Amino acid sequence: MIDPFGRSVTYLRVSVTDRCDLRCVYCMAEDMTFLPKSEVLSLEELDRLCGAFIALGVRKLRLTGGEPLVRRGVMSLVESLGARIGHGLDELTLTTNGTQLAKHAEGLAKAGVRRINVSLDTLDAARFTAATRWGDIAKVLDGIYAAKAAGLHVKINAVALKGVNEDEFDRMLEWAGGHGFDLCLIETMPLGEVSEDRTDQFLSLGEVKRRLDRRWTLAPTSFTTGGPARYFDVAETGARLGLITPLTHNFCESCNRVRLTCTGTLYMCLGQDDAADLRAPLRDPTLGEAGLQDAIRAAIARKPKGHDFVIERARDPAVRRHMSVTGG
Ligand code: SAM
Ligand code: SF4
Image (cartoon, rainbow, N blue to C red; front, side, top):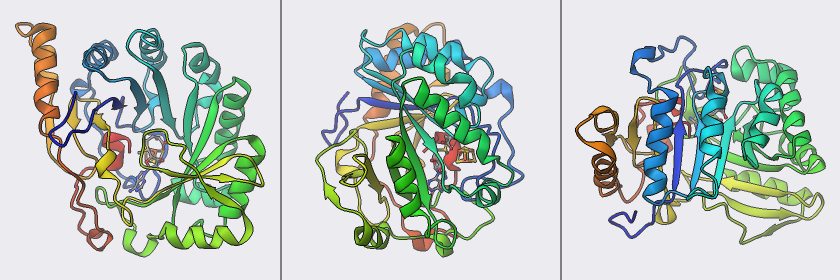
């Protein structure tokens, strides 16, 4: 699938649920209203939809959420998608908050998952509880170590937040490197209304990088996962540092991805509201596989050139939906 700007769309991110067992303050309001279950696609429907994308050229799938591992029966979807690896699909991955990972790490590895991203913004137990409103860091660390033991390659994703974790990046780089985990720092993005003021918390990663340069030997590398991160080899640990800077460095020209929500809505850009409904064609018995693929192609033809993020609009976000709708 080639979009109007010549970019080949080979990567689909699938939010399998909008629900989550945590309430990270920059991601969700405390009193989030979640979708009624009747609006959410079944796991079989999600599998069929993913199959249609793979038939059209998608090579990489990432399951996300909400928290993907809190969806009941999600491992059956992981297994059915895993069975598609080598049959059009190159890679199946997952982004998780790690709370349920201790239970599922082995199952994920067995199903063919090789790499996972775990979101962890701090190594401090009290800060973690405050940042997630009630989370227990011990569970997440258990999950991360279980993933390592199961042979999964772990990348830690941390949102860089002024006054929250900005004094921890040295420690996190050391901890991650010591375990062979890559660490990826992400600038906060204005998505959906939350009670915190994101303008106050915004931390430019340019500044963070200058601070890290004082202690670490960071060599730019051409390594890429096809995503927006710029990577550096950390000489002292042998692991990598990634920086994702949507607000200070625009990466849209090489965007290869689209995002599917658990209701079958396809967002062609994380930073735009335009979306296509795929649930209706999926459920229309008169359309069949060809009709579903036509609907996907028509959506890709509307992929916009780039996002509209500017941090000055964080109080009145240009994009109204929360990150948990599309899963980042
Ligand atoms: N629950 C899973 C998790 O936390 O990894 C998957 C979904 S979560 C929405 C995906 C990623 O989005 C997490 O790494 C989270 O930190 C990030 N995120 C959420 N809201 C964000 C925001 N406003 N700006 C930047 N990143 C955000
Ligand atoms: Fe849940 Fe992930 Fe959002 Fe945190 S970032 S509230 S773990 S969906």
